[in-house]
Amino acid sequence: MTGKRILILLLLLSVVALSVARQPHDADVDDNEFAEFEEFEDEEEPVVEQEPIVEKKVQQRDITGEEPEEEEDEVVVETEDDEFEHLQDEEEFEGFDKERGSTKGKSQDKLPDLEMAKVPLHLRTNWDSFYLEMLMIAGLGVYFLNFLAGKTKNGKLAQCWLGSHREILESNFAIVGDDGSAKEATSGILMKDSENVYALWCSGRTCVEGMLVELKLLKRQDLINCLLRLFKPASDQVVVTVDMEKAIMDKFVFCIAHKKVATKLHKDMQDLSQFTERKNVDRYDLPSSYQVLSEVGEATSAILDKKVCQVLTKFEGLVDFMHFSDQYSGPKNQDESQPTKMPTTKSVLIFSFNVPGRGKTKTSDMEVIRPLLQLVFYCMDKVGRLQLSREAKNKSEKNRQKAEEVFLKQAHAQRQEAAQARREEKKRAEKERLLSEEDPDKARKLEERESRREMKRKQPKMKMMKMKAM
Image (cartoon, rainbow, N blue to C red; front, top):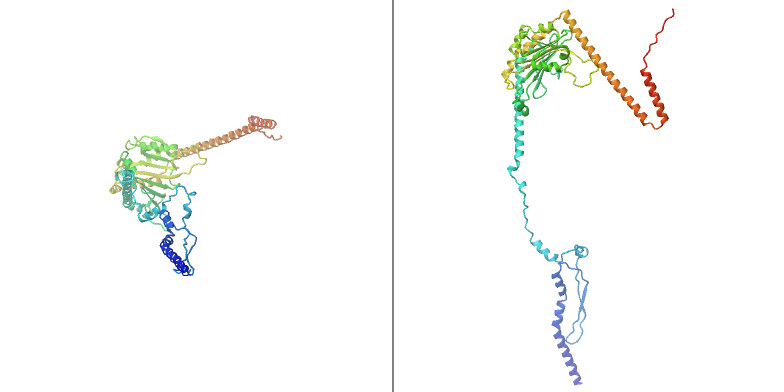
């Protein structure tokens, strides 16, 4: 028995020795259970994939050989779902970088340096590239400055003319410068039609319905017009239009103007081309630069008296033309078609004066043309008192009847041409209808009807006269 106990004891000691010798190796194994996961973490992205729950039971034995109570050590490793896990599918994304995880951290730590884009030479700021724009801006600036200067000068010239002529206007008219905007009559208002055209309306005088004064100044506000005047000089003009009462003025047409202006007026104006003839100025004490267009010689001699001839001679270059007419209807109709009604006529006296200076007008030049306005009032009184003889009146009356007959003939010829055009158009439509007719019987009937109508039209017209029974 003693030998058996010793043998058992030796066996126990050997078992204990073996267990003690195996404990460090088991510990290393237990400590390195997740070593394979560490290697995967080094190679792959730092993404922890979900692993099943691992449960290990470690059993230890006492040296005495008794099995201790079993203790369960649970090690649970849980990971969340990676939101970029679908990007790792190589079948869906070709050329997916497997080392993205290893470079991700580095890219977050160090961003690439920004590089400035190279700007082409034609887009760089260079004053030589904008010479055209600079020239345009300079041109616009010069045009704007010229506009302001020309506008200001025209306004000064207009006000200077009104200031120098206001006294004589107010002494001859009851109302001077009424624009009609107020209920009560106003005076001294110079209406501005444009930057270079001003107007003044006067009324309230015997034998006169009214007088309109137009200041047609040069377009100084327009730079292009200023440049053109360097090659073709022009002058400012004052145009006076006097509306005479129809019953006061006798029937005659008269005009005196410079030769070039007279030729143009005789060609363009309806009354001058229809009633007047060109006359020489040898019998009148006038310069040879003038041309007279007269209908009745008696009226011409009465108007061109000594005082008028003296003024015309003194202001030879300033008087552009004087046009008196009881049949004034304006310029000729430029359309090919003639009017079907007689044009409306009125009795007018038209004066056109040039302002001295030949474009370089000063404010003091407006005072120089004051005697020309006095000539206007003298002619108004002269025409109002003029009484033509019976022969002159008969001549003018025949001229007007002849003009009316010519107009009626032209209107009748125009109506006939229009009717002939309508008939031809109707005949053309009938022929087209015959040609387009497919039924031969119907086409034949239409042709016979048209031929009968044509024969009937060609037959002479006979008038039937009724005779009374004896």
